[in-house]
Image (cartoon, rainbow, N blue to C red):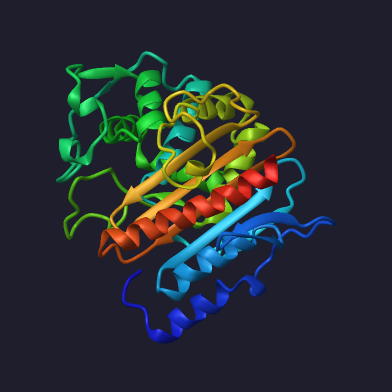
Length: 322
C-alpha cells in the first residue's frame, strides 16, 4: 500500500476530483454550509471536495453510498479499490457466525474461550489490543455474548475466539458465496504484527461493503434470520467517531429511533487507517455507505483532519435521509 510513485499519487488525486465521479442529481439542490457561508451545491459535493483534499495530500481514499430503497448510486470514489479496513473485516466473521447459528452448526450457548490457540502466533489476545473482555474475569462466553461484544466494541478477544470457533476457511468461503472479491478477513486481531503475520487484519472495497450493508437491511445476506442477527449485534456499536459523528446519536444507546434516525455501523481503526461501513435510515430515505482512508498518521493534526472528512461525509448522508 505504501511507497507508491508520484504518477500514482497524481492519478489518485485526479480520480478524487469531484468532476470525475458520479453523484446524484435532483431537481432541487441541497443547501450546504461551506467556509461559513451558505451556498447551493450538488448533493455530496462537500464529500467529494473533502475526500479529494485528502487524496491531494497523498492519502488513499475510497467511498461508496447508495439509496437503500432504489439502489441509486449517491457517492463513488475509487469504490472498487481494495484498501486496509482494520476491524471492519469482523463483519464477515459476524455473518458466518450468524449463518452457522441458523444452520444449527453452532449453538447460542456454545462456549468461546478467551485463550489464544497455539497456532495463532504472537500478539493475539494481548490486553494492549483493547476491548472489554481482556478486563473481565470470565474465562469463556457464549457465542451470542461474544458476538455482541464484537458488534458493540470491536472486542479483539471475542473476535479471535469466534474466529477459532468457526475457522478462517468458513469465513473465506462465506465471503466468496456472497460475491465478495476484494473484501476479506485475513488474520486474527493482534496487538503487534510480526514479519510472519498478515500486514493487515482485513481488506475491503467500499463498493462491496456498502452493498453488503444494503443486503443486510434487505434480508438478503445469507437469509433474513442471519441478516437480522448481524444487524442486532451491530446495532449496539459504540464507535460513532467517524462518519456517524455527524448524526448526533448516543454512542451507547441508539438502537431505537432517535429524531427519526436509525443506524447500524461497523468501524475499523488502526495506525494510518480509518474505515466505516453502515446503513442509516432517516425520516424520508435510507442509505448504505462505506468510507475508507489510508493515510500517513505522522501527527495528531493529520489524524484530526481525516476525522473531519469522515464527519463531512456523514453530514451529506444525514442531509440525504432527513
